[in-house]
Length: 289
Image 1 (cartoon, rainbow, N blue to C red):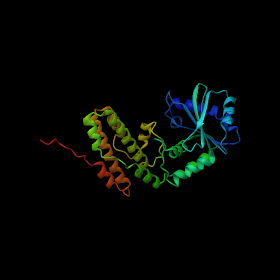
Image 2: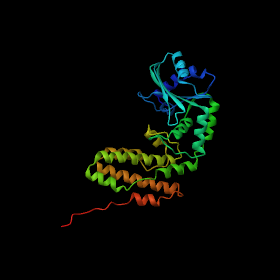
Image 3: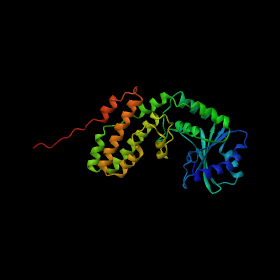
Image 4: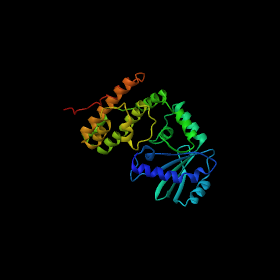
């Protein structure tokens, strides 16, 4: 737990009572980089409030005004828009406060641990991210409520691991990356590299039975993984920092090693078709004289 995180958590203890004084608030916790203990000078403070019934924006604004915040704003949160994301500045710190109804979190937890939901919005696995936040929460209020959810999401379901891996075994023929590297088509090469890296990470989150927290602070989460290619993150950096050909070769090797890990740790997942697709070579045509 670094100094930046401790300072943000101390601010959270000062901010939370303005909300938890409301009898409809059932729980409050810190999540994000402060809860992980890795905040830096650019990090805001992320708070979650759990309500028996979701308040209106006007009710939240009145609470915010009672503690004299600056720069207040609010918007619906998430694809289902069953929550509010509130932003304001207090004590010189930007605060992002998420507000959820308890019933919404109950449903999300059940979707993840019983229905093995691997849906995503853009790059974010919203439901798994909430499970990750709950698992790593620093609880400020409503300990019993949060601990009940923590028990529900532990252990990570084996079926969810399989679903995550099967969803992301969609690698195209890697020969296409080699062609882009030879042509020095760098924008397309690196755009594809980013997609491949995300798929590898998604597979590894499933393989390590870790609820997907999103792609921020990737180094931290990769360090927590016990199942991964050797020197995984350092080699990811080489993918993007080396010349095009060397980075492409490194990425292919990382993918091959990740496939091998899946076969070793989840042998019930069939990679035969994926390997055939991944190794497919594009034809070449030479001019006829």
